[in-house]
Each structure stands twice: as structure tokens, then as C-alpha cells.
Amino acid sequence: MYGYLIDMDGVIYRGTELIEGADNFIKTLLEHDIPFLFLTNNSQRSRRDIVMKLRQMGINVGEKHIFTCAMATARFLAEQKAGGTAYVVGDSGLTTALHRNGYSIVDKKPDYVVVGETRTFSFEMLEAATNMILDGAKLIATNLDPNCPTQSGTRPGCGAIVALLEEATGTKAFSLGKPSPIMMRAARKELGLSSNETVMIGDTMSTDIMGGVQMGYRTILVLSGGTRCDELGDYAFQPDLVVGSVADINPREVSFNIEEYTLLSAS
Ligand SMILES: [Mg+2]
Image (cartoon, rainbow, N blue to C red):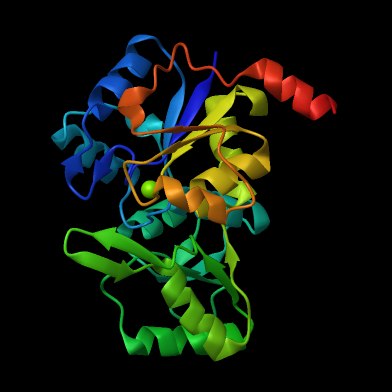
């Protein structure tokens, strides 16, 4: 039996619109006690906010089912330097996660400059962050997604803000979000599964599928989000399965053709 790491945007919903059948898919997981975790590269919302957003779409899960890149980032920093300080370019999902993990948010001499999704930052903040990094603060990215689809088009993602700070300071950010093995592994451990019991379901090749492939998880690409079938040829790695949407997955009977896999790995 497998457990599932499930991306949200493009898999469960598009913007505020539920993808048809996603609610039944999650219901099946809950009814049969199949372990799963929603895995998102959006650091803007806290666990509780996400639970509420899902509830409004008819999906009833608890906070324990949510794992964000903000959580992965905050836990990683707490392990690296307990009780540290951070200057944050980001929203409440990120500051909440940092506080929960024993971090203080400061605006002078931070240990880390941490960047997440936000709509409310100013040039002055980027200027302050630039000087902090030049003074020795380490640049941390919650994720490197260049952009994100919205109802009205595309918005610049966390990766775009990070690129500005990298260019200004001549340093490279360390990123914790998908496909980082740090987030992918932390999520699996949260479920208490081994690598070969873990399946990653997502709509983005360069984050969800790449992250899963790197960890040796099974991967399922859904075509209900940002990837078209004819784009698969552009990648050197491939998902184990490609389906239209999660409505096409029966989580109790999913098969990855184990025989063929064994043959391939033996040769
Ligand atoms: Mg997605």
C-alpha cells in the first residue's frame, strides 16, 4: 500500500476552483486511512489558512495533512541554528512557521534573509535585505518557482524576487521548497513511510516530478494543471504514470508495473 504526497494548485484546484473529482479522491484516502500530505510551494498561507481554503471547496482535512515550503524552511533553519533570527520578505504563512520553530523576526543583523511569496513588499525591503546579505546574512529561498498562474494571468513567484537579491549581492540562495530533497524527505518522514511506499502526485515536472524522482519515490503527473502531454519529451526524467487528473487515480489499486521496474533495475 502506498501513501501520497499531493501538490495542490493544478491538482486539487485551479485558483479557487475545485478540479472535478478531487474531493472524491481525498474522501477515498480519508475513508480508507491511506496516509497523505498536501505539499505546497506556496509559503503565503499558514496550515490553518489552507485547511480553511480547502474546507470552503468541500475538502475536509486537518492541519496534519498540510506541509508547506514555509514549514520545511523553518524546520531546516531551526536544525541549522536553533533560536536564530530572520529578516523576512514574505507573508504570514512564513512568519508563523518561523515563530513556531523558535525564530525571531528582526530588521537588523539577522542570521538569515528568508524570502517567500508576498504581494506586500517594497524596494526599501529589498534594499535592506541586500545590505544584510552583503553584511553576512545567509540568503534562504522558500522555493524557486519563477512564477505562478492566477485567475487573471501570471504573477512573479518567489524565485523571481530571489533572483533579484542574488543578482544584487552576487550570492546564491539556498532553497528548501520542491524539488529540494529537504522538503521531499521531511514530508515522507512526516507520513512515516519508506521511500518505496511513497507516491508524489503533481502537475509540474520541474518541482513535483523531479523532486519525487530524485528521492526514488513513485511519481504521477496529472494533466489538470500546468503541463501538457506533448511537453514530456523536453525532460530527461519521466513520471511513472501520467493521468488526466486525480479523478483517474484509484489510490487503493494504483499499480506501477513492478515487474517491469524490477527488470529495468536489474539490467
Ligand atoms: Mg501545482
